[in-house]
Image (cartoon, rainbow, N blue to C red; front, side, top):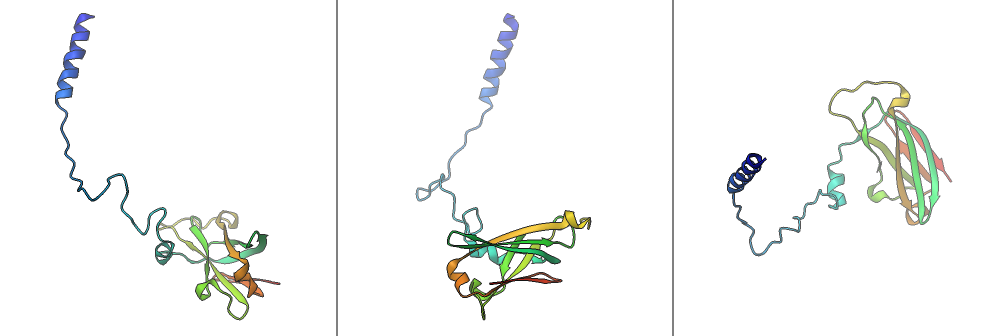
Length: 158
């Protein structure tokens, strides 16, 4: 028992002597606890993220519902992609500034395709959903909400 204790004590002393020292190279003007600002981080600039969106129009729009919400409405769209694995599905505005043009508020159902080939699969495995909130101010000038895909268009009129 005494030999085991001695061996542990000696090995602990040897290992503690192997540690290295690190020196800080931080200048006086920066705080290492505050991360540098980036435009693509979690709380980065929304326009910078939208500029690099790689979505493409999906195959079909299969359902369109407009649900009232406080301060506006939620546009909810069901669609079908051409193959499995599509992600980051969005309703991107067709109109500049997301404002109605001639009473039509238009969106495109888009998604990002995976980099590798994925199986086509059944329609149920390729279904996607996207939603977008719009304000009462945006809806005030709209008589029609239009969502387009590659093969079809769905319209909701009021």
